[in-house]
Length: 260
Image 1: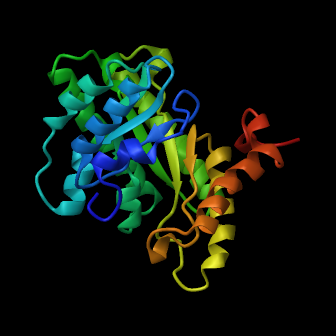
Image 2: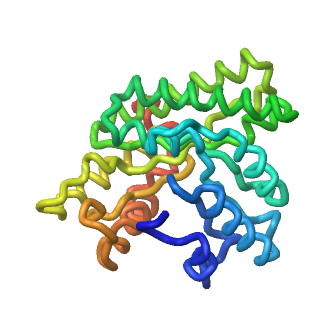
């Protein structure tokens, strides 16, 4: 976006990143399709079409919700075309963090996510895609908060709701899953005494993992003050590494399912 990375700079930002190992997910509100084109070009230049993973970040309803303008669903078809060469790249995102950061509670965040997801499925099937292909094109971006158990429950509920949508639409059972990208809550990051945000990020990241989010992003502890510094970026990354490698949260099949 205009206050972040320009689409033309995406190739430079991803220099030396091993794209066959590291998934890349875009988030934008004002330059979604331009950024999607730029990332698709980077993927194509890497000659790893079958290995690259990520999301092109196209969410026209989310962009319209923030701008207060009508949603242009026509960009969905172009996003799908951009992602076609890359088997593991989903072109569309339902960004529920937009509604969370605007004040939505757990139930409202789920409601907005499901409603937007259904609208995208309608648009995609109207453009000639099968319902299986439509669901395979969508990723959900959800918030993870310091309310550990509510976050776990919300992520689990979203999977159940989306599975029910797939059942009603006649989607193949193995393709009804809601792939979720959990992002730690921006509205819970304090500007003053920013270091306590490390604790908030840790609890939120654990909740996202226990809730089953396939992809997780821990926002830097100084995100409320502008672009993060090197320490904040390093801690943000290492929060996930410590939870995975030292706390072993990824070694349990269903950590929220109860214990002995």
